[in-house]
Image (cartoon, rainbow, N blue to C red; front, side):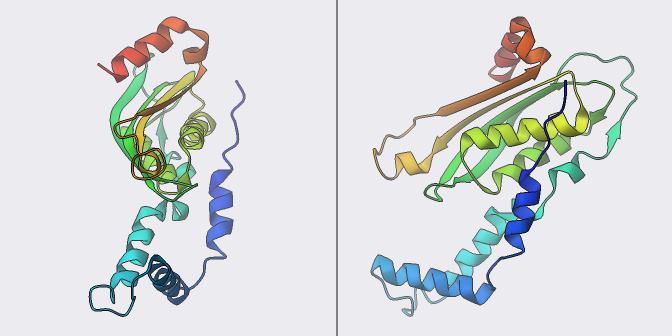
Length: 205
């Protein structure tokens, strides 16, 4: 199977090269506070722009990270292991690109090793890197699976995300506790319904 090139990292790096200054970001937060109807100079809000900009630096530090680098150190000696490697309940903390509201949930990631395996913490790190960017859940699912496909050349990859979107629960329709599930399967997981079913059962066991 031909691997799908991973392009989001290049786009992210290009975007960060045009990043406004910190002072411009602080002023933008002051403008939003004033637009909301409050006074950015009142005592309770005077330090809010600094806190917001610092928080954004943490929430969106995925733009500074490279999934390819995380997956570059691999191991070839798997002593004959040929079954799936699965990580369950990886925390997902991301922000939707439409309203910049959080969506929070879990990721379930599995792959069937080919000739290479990677440290399991690196898989969780890949999820974190792509989650810490402005996203939609469908694209996030694709980003994770494309990175693993491209750099590990496994026999198959399976990804499931299960998340609640605050843009739906705190605004708009105001429906709480609605979970959105996205999945994608490649290689053997896509071709073998029994293997796909086993992944789904293990993910939610």
